[in-house]
Image (cartoon, rainbow, N blue to C red):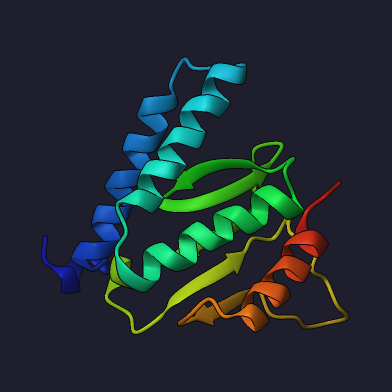
Length: 146
């Protein structure tokens, strides 16, 4: 099936296959062993990145570990992701994943960022400056259920 007829790019299909592999790897693994395996998969996903993607993902990981240590590190479609009670809260989508000009840090619907009728849930990040880090720390704290 061609890209045009399937509706998915080669990168999107690769991400879906990656998600299937993530689910297979966790099949039958429970409790602390599952959390440990998911944590290692998250670190491996970060280590596989290069350049700005790796620097941003490493810093996001540190921010989450410091500001919301109750979130569980894992991967989701190959993205470094952090979840609470199995529900994704925040993730990093590297620029290299889909050939975009910037990576993005996204917050899923279970992130407690609601602010009236409209609020941002994804942020383009080209560099991890002190200003960006402080804003992300604030967002991760707000987004994380206690």
